[in-house]
Length: 430
Image (cartoon, rainbow, N blue to C red; front, side):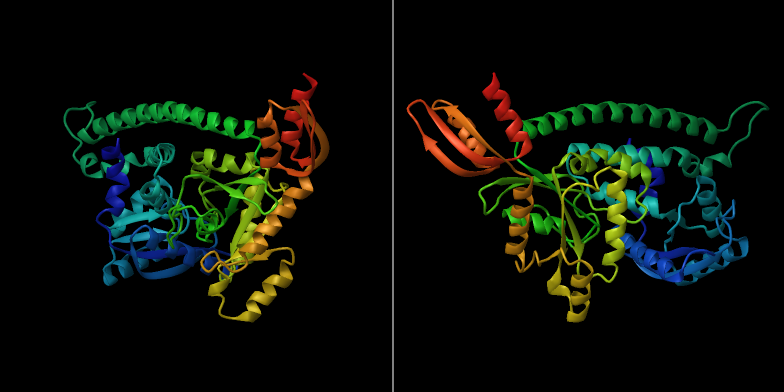
């Protein structure tokens, strides 16, 4: 189905090399917020492979149904884009299909919005079968109302006898039907893939090993942190949305407890809702985990804003109340010690680390051990000598305080997670 979507999405990116960015400032929006949003769009656009040659902010009282902004400003921006020779105009606000068509007819170059940029990044970064399907579904649903945009050249060729349909209209209807059929097929296949992932989750839950999701704003170093903690080789790149697929690795804490860490897709300001839905399975890892590790970029002056955005997303997922460790990463990039001091005063319970150099990592591991210790339940258990697998389970998931051997059984006095305790008590009562 890529050939159909290609008329809309690939046409927008494959041949485009430079871009001119447009941000909208409504009367109630502070200029600093718009500038930050435009800088984020710059990062997104460059991640998508476009070179940003210029940008502007348009003040607006209310949206214009035809072009989002006024006709005069539209012609002015189109003229600037042509003068500096860019291939594409990118809006930080969503454009309706009609607005997008109107802009491209007036400017005679590609015009896209922030959602389409993010879709392109996701399409290039998806690796696993599930992520590929999720991205494809999101692109299909985004492109469906924009199919007419891909057939503008044919719609001008309508003619023939009265009551007949033009070539463009016929092709448009064919494409629409094919896209809808493809959407249904993707949804069915996604359901099968999700069922497989659900089986994997059930297997992990049966193991009763504590789980923690690494969450946070995109490009804060979550994958680097996972690699440093577990010694794994998860893909890392200094770009937005470098990884899209949930990756799980095991960490043995200093108290002997195993902890499963899952790296999740990074959050971002105003992530399109269709993409949140498309990556629901990734975000479900956050909902199903026992603990959260919230990672922020200590060198980013917008770290506090990113903290607020991430917490807002977690609240939407009903996951904000989970036990959480706040981690400020990239302290090696902090040039001004005063900025670091301010963050430490604002977030006194946070851990400050560098996944690159390893600084502060011991403190993070200690913090995780303490967090898990607080949730352990103290109890005594007696197992038959033949069930050493249950003894191993206690050692793997909790802390053994005292161990005694008898002729036909082993007695443990230990602190274990609630899941482990329930499983053991169920066995002992049977």
